[in-house]
Length: 149
Image (tube, rainbow, N blue to C red; front, top):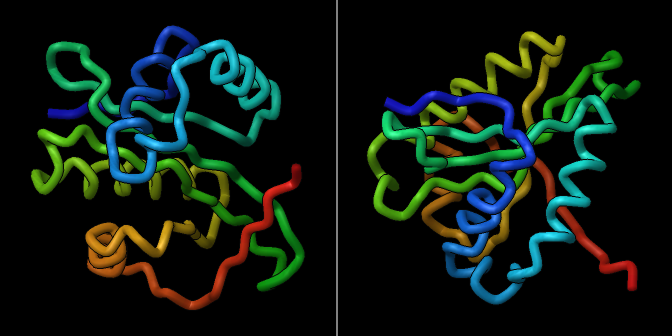
């Protein structure tokens, strides 16, 4: 059974390992934890930005996601939950951990007063696309990104 909780600074290294353990993360994540620890501290200070980890029965971090609560005016002033950086340890993929993770995310979003959950994903993640559609997400928008050098 996986238990989800807010991450603490000691969990950052395990989350970075999860981020690195996939086809895209292998080439873009780094080994210098100082940058990640500083980013985690900024996330903590923002208040509406949480890193969530999933622990197995042995206390190992085997899943993680980031959830940010965003207030806005559109859609009748809907409060949104933005979910990002979703990861499940490779040996547990396909075993229901992702579904449990999103049940946790929905509960957190509802508790924060959100009426909409949204996420973006890299278009190269075909399996993830099928997973999100199975959960009920609808590909309703086109997203764009621009690096700010």
